[in-house]
Amino acid sequence: MLAACYEGDGQIAMRDVERRPPGFGEVQLKVAYVGICGTDLHVLDGDMDARVTLPAILGHEMSGTVTAVGDGVADWAPGDEVVVVPLDWCGTCPACLRGCAHICYRLNFIGIDSPGALQNYWNVPQRSLVRVPIDLGLKEAALAEPTAVAAHDVRRSELRAGQKALVIGGGPIGLLIASVATAAGGEILVSEPNSQRRQHMESVGLRTVDPADDLASVIDDWTLGAGVDISFEVSGSVAGVEAAVMSLAARGRLTLVAIHSRPAPVDLFRFFWRELTLVGARVYERADFEEALRLLGSGAIPTDALITDVVALSEAPAAFERLRAGQAMKVLVDCGVPA
Image 1 (cartoon, rainbow, N blue to C red):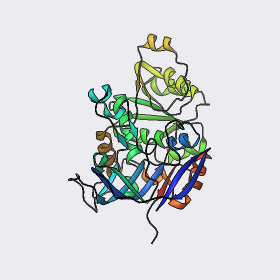
Image 2 (cartoon, helix red, strand yellow):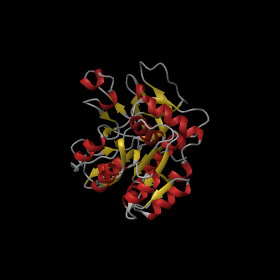
Image 3 (cartoon, rainbow, N blue to C red):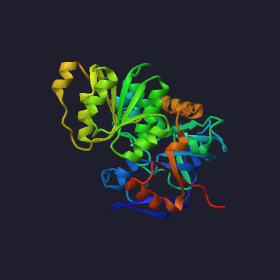
Image 4 (cartoon, helix red, strand yellow):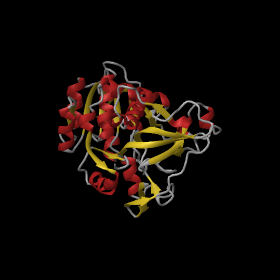
């Protein structure tokens, strides 16, 4: 069968790989769709070379259908449509024992630390599966993982209906956070320098601002000088962190979503002066996946606007390059076996 593999040095190549039967406690999936995300691009840029084993099959945003089950699997059967929570935890570390298995100290993030979904068939632990609702298509269900990220971010922010929130960064996760926060009753403003991305956001009814247009004045006018209740830092930039802090009202909460691979300066005096809170939001829990599937089924997530390209598995290398060049919002790879 075919798989898209990271070969190192920024290269994705197609390889023939062995299809093996599922082991004990495993389920084999016929992969339907796989989304390529910013984390995959971090891998492509070499930022996670210490974690991946080359050649590495990437992909963790997916949907598919059960085709076979291994020994010890009782709750799943061929034909079940599912998505995968790509987290495999140890169960014994301090994080797991505190009920935070999603940030296990020895976490195996499937699709980075172990083989991912960019292949025709994929074997995964049965505990990683979440059932797709009967009224949700597999194409839309492939957005469950990034939507679960957004659901977790909004839950960690403690956003309440009627509160104002600033989302800094208008990529796919920024759009999803804005959509989830809007569904939760928040009033949302998205700060994004790219005019094309702003237009994309505005096409689904979101309010946007170019941070170059005196963001502080826009925030002051919008909040009558108070500042926003919540800020989501999704850009991964030093300027984004600064704007997220300076935009907050008294006792506001900065929810840190982006991966900052290098330490960023933070105005701690501002945190002291306004009694601000900084909260990290990493990956998701099972409840976030269930909420994501509910939101996708409800129409709260603008799936048509988010999915800009669908390509065949053989075209995955070119799709990575399109995303690197900023020429697409969300690319889904159709991993179905050609007829």
